[in-house]
Length: 204
Image 1 (cartoon, rainbow, N blue to C red):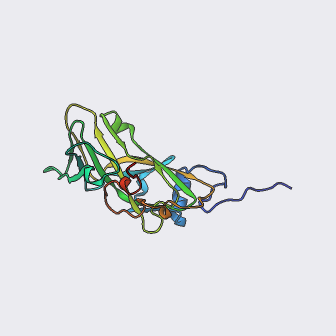
Image 2: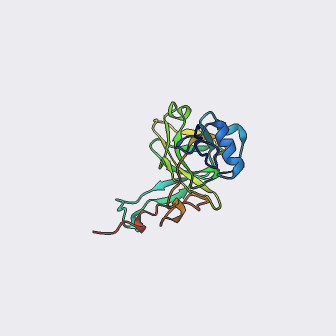
Image 3: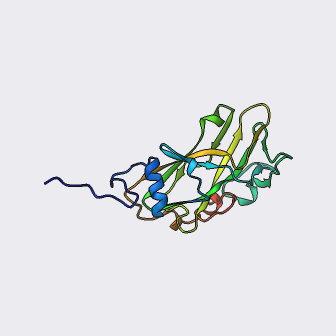
């Protein structure tokens, strides 16, 4: 008698693997994946594109940064769009901006975020922490905070609401402790927040 592998709630076989477009849509339908607002046009063959939110902050320092001393951390200074609604990123500037979408992953999903080749070919890197842990934003959804850096010698103008990065999703065997249960996490953030590193790094 032939055995059949059990399936998990996202509809894929229980062993881990990348979610393709059909599995992404299925996960949204079952609630395993929360995307708000959701645009079906952002579903790619093996990823979900995310858009640039409408707020942005530049990191401004006044001296050396001690990661254990919150008083030395960079200040988040809001960046206003220009007269055409564009976000100007200056050469060498580090900008933090949220995704337009709020994301929620069940404990059976994990993700990786990466910038797109379109932006990389224009000298723009979109990074921060590529990993999105199981359980991130599962209760209410949360934005992903992106670090945007301009490596060119002139400003680059970005358009809020436009596609800015991709979220690749993986089916997993489930985590024992979801990300939202960990201390000092960013799982309920609805806007960009400052680093919480000082909460768990102490002076020696």
